[in-house]
Image (cartoon, rainbow, N blue to C red; front, top):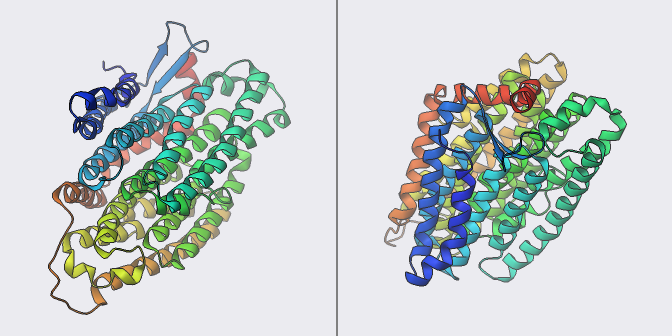
Length: 489
């Protein structure tokens, strides 16, 4: 058995060892993150086959639950750790040539710490350690947004820091109130005893925790930081923030709602909030002329769709929401990576500067187009089966309320299609023919983009490759009694 602790310990240790390696050989700094993430990806894949049979509960320090810190390596956590490692690996390869400014040691340390924090969030079974790992993720994100040290980046990072600090404070206060009520920080132990106190007494900590996590998850109206932060950061970091960080925030929201509180009474409210987040995000994206701000607002819309799917709270609905998380992660990472070199070639983020770029950068623009089509939900890409499953689950839900809301969600998809097709039109059908030589992205950038394209197509054609794992992950999230039993016996 491979110990799941290694998924956190190895990248964390290597992050702090980067300056030491760089002292002896300067280029080593940029090769350590890919090596660490290859390790995490292999370990996650090895663990995944095992945890589909029985989840692994790792007790830290020799104590037994609920008196110890625990890691819960179930289908959901290990699946997300594999996704984090895969996307992080591809983005780190992309950054080998893309990140040229500033000290490489600082960038790569922060990059690894961000992914370590994300991995810790999805594996921990202790709510205070969820806060600790969440803070590692957030603090690394703040610094990386300002990595280029330009005015826009620093201003965006400060906004992100202020709003993130408020969210973290709300989260910590909520955790403190829960500890005061139950005298434990173990999620399963809190869940087991949640009905022993009045619903009113847990309502305040629940709201505080969801609001605190909702800032990083970019749920409306807590998402004001996102457009500036994602558009100002280096594109490799934008890909991680959009593809990993906000997804992990939403994972934490879902884990708290389903596992700890079993809060079925607020699901209708969350579904409404999801649709509102979706429509606001898509309409704001439609009005943008800056391509990175457009992609940032698009992420808000996608988070809204995922929240709506999770709020359906059926097996199909949660599976569809998790599937859409994977679809968004792969597609949005691909879009930001392609946009990074498109912007570099055009010298501007404005849409008008991208005219005719499809003829000058055919491979990069093709990758962007496939990512856009996947995110919209066109077959045969991964976005089609994930969105189809969400529509199917909404129509099959007992509440007719969801059938009405899915119509609004489809309206959001139409808006999404409109602005992405506009970008494709700008790339291929506008601009005069010139004799400017073609200069596509370098091989270190094209390889990760190619892998994202292949994954989007293969999973889109054969969704069965992931649906079995997603069904097990959804079952773990919904069946809180099994979660409690596996940890506490």
